[in-house]
Image (cartoon, rainbow, N blue to C red; front, top):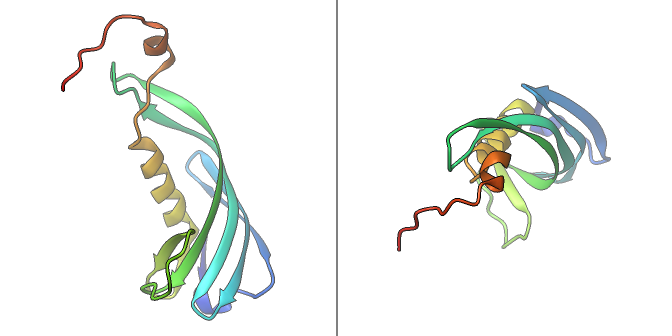
Amino acid sequence: MEIEFRKVPTTPKEFSNDFASVKLEGTFCKMSPTLIKVDASLTGFTSVQCIRCGEEENINLDEKLNFLLSDGIFKGNESDDLIIEVENGIIDFDEICESELSSLESDYHICTSCLDDNEEIEKEF
């Protein structure tokens, strides 16, 4: 789903976006001419690789996402919120989902069989 930055309303608008095996849904609204606030949840499942044995395992997702979208390079003050810079004035929710999934997949995951295995893991110091 794509939407032009300039067409985003100032009142919260609901959205739902399906990408691969996940769904991103929530609300978005314009806070200023260059910032949009997004409150959403990412649900579904994705496959991740165990860092110990290399087996793939599906994990269920139920993540709350709150972030800001900036039209171009963010030139504001320090913010506690995650800020995603949007290029060409087009918000692409598929790209946001893909980025979030890549971030989750690159994290360290240990499968259930490795968690149950009490065998020592070699450590480097």
